[in-house]
Length: 362
Length: 278
Image (cartoon, rainbow over all chains, first blue to last red; front, side, top):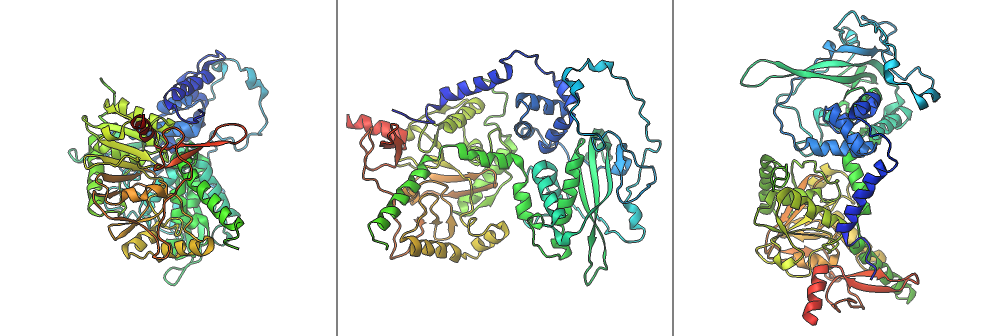
């Protein structure tokens, strides 16, 4: 008898073997974790973000194990992360104390401390570099003497606008620990700490598409946001254990930050002013930090009393669908057998057709 | 045997949190309790809610049965069973009557469950009103006010258009005269089994982070109208293996000419029915 999708035990074992074979069968050299970490660093950074676990070694391992399927790698990292104990919440990082690797503003020609281009594909020509097909050992590379920025601390560029009250104030009104999306179920209306976490973990492609939709026309009044400042660099992480009563530094992380400036027409209580959208990611994920800042601003619409017309302004639409571990799981579950349910539909459609064909209904 | 993980994968604090939510859910039959769902090493939509509920209540003496579409040997059921074998080192079974804990996707076993058993449903979408109102903020209000007109109108419209309610699976029920509840995508054939069931029924939705419950001996009514009473599916055929005319049947295409056969969806029931008839 033909019985599809049954006899699962053996099939699963063979399937896993085939997957392993796919990785190994041509007998190429195994990629070292370090090679992935250093040479595929953007992939590694994407995975630590959406996997929401800052561990580049494990991220590289996940990429290797998933054979380069980044959504799968993100899933692996999340499933590992969930088993880790929660010791403490860090205090808020201070990005004005960032050790800068890149810092640009599109709103001001010159900024105190200067614009620092840093490593970026922005001005590369997207021409395939055939010399990489057969690259010499990396150690033949000549070290560039990087000009270290002289000033270590850069105040946020857009704070300059604060002096004239042109920009909305960001006030920290968090009383307790922040909302924790890894511990608490979603709540609506969502608070900003909740949505910022979901956006930070959210799928880059989804957020990029959403932010694109907003600036292309499916956003508030077709306004054009301005990059106040984009930064990429290293910050210290502090925790403040109750039993100590003071802060201790537990390490440093790389982050990307984007401050987006957007317009606001004002209302009865507030004269027109600039508003902010903010994006923060682990590692070097500039594109995503920009996307987040646009989505963040759109999600603030309700608070400004703006009309909610577009998907990007809709909290439930954005926050429920941004997570790719959730999304990929649910979309791919359609692969699971549904023959019991389908049988119900088959039965029904036969019955409905019979009734109509026999003229009962006509 | 050392598994390298805490018993049943989740840490004890998480399991306790989930058990508290289960208790709340049992106290308010059919009410969807939000819970701090965790990420699991299996994909969302593949049973993570059910797995978390099972992981939180399973003990070393439990005998676990896992079914998908009624069958013990479908790949995902096997995969979930293997997961629990790996992180709990417990006994599993295919026999409904032997199991103390049954995790299921899309079916309720044909064998009547008893008071010593718990059945855990995997839930893709806990909100029965979601297709009618996409916003959670709104649907929570509708439940709070017991404002279910949307659903009744929907069923009415189906009857006026097709002559009957065309929902064949995930057919909505009312639990304990109060909450409209999603029975999960079980065929409506199984709905009557939920009514006054002796076993505790727990429902876990991982992605949506909701737990709900139907305590033993609770009234569960499939929504209908006096002049259009609720009906279950029937077949003209019987099971081609065991001959049963009382079980839910899967249709199987047996050759390239498209000839078909019908067999029980519940593999354990089919086997024991066959033995009984010998």
